[in-house]
Image (cartoon, rainbow, N blue to C red):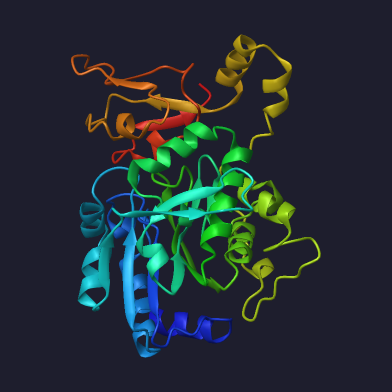
Length: 357
């Protein structure tokens, strides 16, 4: 059933010719989570795409991603993605080797160290999950490409670009470097609320496909009820004018997003830009305002299992473990915290709350 639906979508859009070509499928595998939690692209979605590529004559199909922390093999096994890839005759890959790839037109980055396999294949297809995102508000086909940067190497980008607009600009540089040939979004069961790792599954029954990842993301965010121009990544893409612009019209060969909008979708509250205050007031005043205005992580002793994933991924080294304190297991230095919410993304037991108080 899923395979037939995906086939119908790609027949009505500009799907690349994969005959005798090598293809990298890049799912969203944020962490080792069971498929029903909607944290990762569903393995049955990936199975359907692999079968379609085989029918269309792809010579080589590779499946891989890099979670923020932990082993890709373990995450692949728990999410079911690795088992499906191998069962369907695709290659499962772990992003260990990297290749430096230039980005001469980048605004924030002039090169990226990407998983080498991304430079060895003919075609890259992004397979995102339709989800909210605490930092970027929405994550889709474009943000999904961040996983091509292996493991903890991603953390330094949060430290280098702590402001949302700067981080979004870096992601668009990455998008411009990778240029996926096609994107298929798993929105059959999406994630609402405090995504991308600890939100709530929401039955939405959607599959979106396009050769323009930015247009696909714009459509998905619109369906979720966002004011799309307020999504930092999409705002930056619109400003650059290549993939999206005010003069362009997105064509919908099937259903129009106006007929699909989910009015009660639990979105992330979009904050107004704080850049003016950062430049206009002394650092000590800004840090005080930041703690009041910008949501921050709060750590709950229960159900924390002290796995220390949050400590491992924190780019600012703002977290420490309190092993002998049953009332509080993780301590945070809010002056060092850059509000990237990486800790919240990788917590396996939802022991971190994001809020102002």
